[in-house]
Length: 327
Image (cartoon, rainbow, N blue to C red; front, side, top):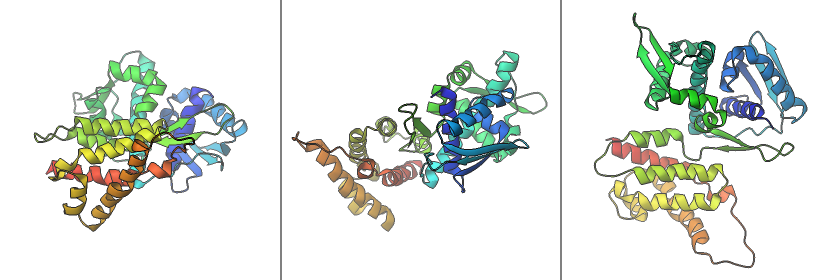
């Protein structure tokens, strides 16, 4: 399977995850092209890829282009991800940032100079977001040194790609790795595509990175979150459950206690918070311990995802940590 085919599958999975209809996708031609790293004149490449996904891989039932709107009907075999509202937001935000970078790169290709001075606020309407949303994402990309954001004479706000931004846009595998919460693992041309997403929201990690506290060094907690995502993305479920157990052992001092059991029993976070933390202290701990301490046997059964999936509880835990440290 070619790289463009994988990118189009990923882009369709992002749209399906955030769409109410899910199997019936509608997207503006320009936005769809940018989301997969193609430029305006490369619409034929997109059409060819959609035909391949329909005729060869049977992931699409039908598609058509009508007045710059793409209408795509996904097949039952397409891996439409089941995601929470938190994950939907993360998928949408990362996709939007990727599109903004590719929009700058499109201008860079035209003039062969990184100073393209593109007013990205004009992307608000086609992307269906507000001008403030665009500025928020531009500021993030600027903070990561992928673009330079400034104000021109006359007050117009424009953006230019940095050298790092150019290199990122030229390496499609890298930009999709950084700016897509949906990962498609292709095992072989004729094998089904499998969906993988971020286990811990990138937004949560970003919030932790922004916290400035003298009382606690968050480096290890942030790294554990990143490694949980790496383990999940690569199907390392034993590592994933052990990382989660490490997280709950690591954070009690933030709540003012010495053990996670004390957090569960004594922290005043409300009834719902207590119930979710009880599941971490009881179920997660027992599952992790069973894999950590079980000696080798004649026959082993490896865990499946439902056994180690505590992402909701971990997200609530991290949310409370962020709330505590921001006050």
